[in-house]
Structure formats: structure tokens, C-alpha cells
Amino acid sequence: MKQFHRDKFWAILPARGGSKGVKFKNLKRLGKFPLIAHTLKNLKKSKCFSKIIVTSDNSKIIKISQNYKVDTHERINKTHSNDHSMSELPVIEVLENIDQNEWPKFIFMTSCTAPFIKPSTYKKAIKILEKNPNGTIFAAHESHYFLWKEGKKGKNKKSFIPISHPFKKRLGRQFIPLQLNETGAFYGFKTKNFMKAKHRFFSEAFPCKLQGFEIIDINDMNDWNYAEYVINNNEIKSNR
Image: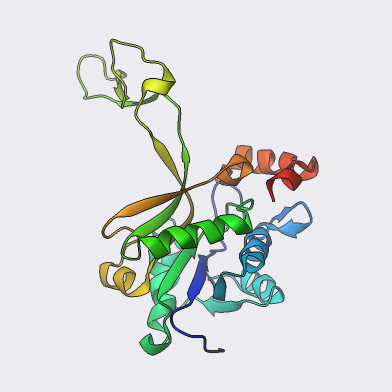
């Protein structure tokens, strides 16, 4: 692999072959391109990353990724691709197989399931990370929902309680404290801090707010159908 100056940014994309909500979604064509290709193209357009690496257990994903002139890593530990493994594990495996002297200063762990992230958003996220180099930058959008969670089990086991808003008083949304929804589109952090913690969050966290169609994250067929509608109706042109 070509060596880059270690003070650059790398993007690492975990992309397994199996998926439950949408079967083989990383390979499935969204518009004219496979789902994974949308993220690869936007990462390259941003011109922020000296290296982009796709880590996968699937030979077809590896081959498609190579068509976009990025580096690839075929996973050694196949348990990193099961339903219970977190995305950190294949990213850690990639870095463990690269000499530490070649590590970049920062890593972006990037999802393949958020196809509409603008190149300019990656640039914005990097600026936030440069100002907060020991924290984690995460993709998020403002949430104005009235959220509820299951309450303690009592006589009525179906009872729910509110999150971040009072039960007996209805406040207007403008009076509810700012809430952010973590989308999972990307996480940026210092490489050495991440490898020491083995987790994406290890100190402070700072959001990079997404806008418009950027918040679409494909987990099931409802998400897929919406993304397909956006693509087929040329809605995404206004989001570049």
C-alpha cells in the first residue's frame, strides 16, 4: 500500500456482506450505483482523506470498492462480521495490521448506509475535530420528537414514561432542551486514543450536524424505499 504522511486523515469503512433489514444492502444498487459506491464517491470528492480503506468479509464488496480506487482489507476474524459485533472491531483489525509508524493522526470510521452525506460535510467535520483533537466527532441531527421509553414494570406493564419532557405538562417543542439524534454516518477521532480505548467514545463528544437528506440512514426497506424515491426523483441534486 502507498504510504501517506501520518498527520493526514484516513477514512475506514466497515462493510460486511450480511445484513438483515435489507439483504446484501451494501451491494444493492441505489439508483445507478451500489449503495457503498455513494459513500466512496462522496469521500473522494471531499479530498479530505489521504487513504480510504474498505474492510469487508465479502469478496464482491472488496471488488466493487477496488473499482473506485480505494484500499481494501479482507477481514481475518470472521466473527467481526456477525450480527453482534460492533463496527469498532474491524476498524481495529485494519489498524493492527498496519505499522504504527504509518498510522494517520486521525481516523474517520464511516458508514456505508448514509449515501447522501455531502463532501462539504466531511470538511466541516474535520474542522470540528481539528479544534477538538482529543474528542470524538459524530454525525447528528436535531431531534424535535417527544420521546418515550418503557417504564418500570408494575401493574400495567405497558406503561411508558417521557424522556426529556414532563409527564403532566405539555411544553412547546421550542422550550424543550436541545436534543440530537446520533445518525451513525461517521465518527472522527485521534487514532492513538481510539486504539487505546477500543471504542469510538472515550472522552468528550462533539456533533457535526447534518442537514436535509443527509440524515437518511438505511437500516430497513422503509429507509431504502425513501432513499430510492429521493434518487429517482432527482431530489438529491439540491443536496450537493
